Image: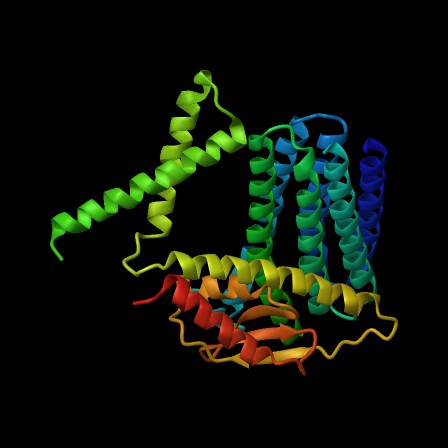
Length: 96
Length: 97
Length: 164
């Protein structure tokens, strides 16, 4: 069982690395911000798998923290982008 | 009993890994930011969900299982919220150009 | 409605939210006598924040419709993931991306935000904000019946949470 889960960790990590390459290649800031989202899902999957393979319950807590951090990073990024747009008066953003 | 649990784990984790593969292939092949966002959020969300489902039979206690599920729910909710914010940003980038 | 009933309802929803947050604490941090001060502080802070951000609602909620909505949500996220996977792995890369405007009847603010969050998991659509009171969706395939699916989702949401 552990061999299988370890292989799954390796596979998801490889997918994560490939995805990061494509995102870093991307043209805009938005593409780069998607890297945080990618780590937010792929990284958490890896941590949860590792927590089970290595019987380290703390890995699950790390995954939880990573989920929160990735979310706040993305929201901070979007907030910053939106407020600069509002200042320029480019477009109403639909915020209340 | 343990064999049944292991088979469930192998099936669900393999399916989850497959969706991570699909998400990454989508990221590499899709033409622009918004279509890549679809690949990232939809495929990876499902991949993580399946991996959580696969780890549930291996969880030591009810609490461990519930914790896995709450992390997944948090990630889903966060992904659904953040993906539309990123999409809004991407559309404004496109119209601003 | 008298002020007394209002206050009673407010306390009821504060108590039920605090109970939910306590359960969440027990799941995430475990049960330990030494944790009680930290747990109490966290539950009080979470309840206060939730009452500030999300005022107790007076709409009638149907448990059956909520369960149906959760079921919809799960089925849709599975279909959406499979749909993206199929398109990504197809050698011909079948994409017809474009924008669709959806005129929603939900009022601005919380309800509309709940709707866009739900629909961001629908197959092939991501909400990208609004213009002239219409929601703008980016679709992977604009030839799919996107508008009909969005309308069905809105009806399910109204049945579950906003039935007045």
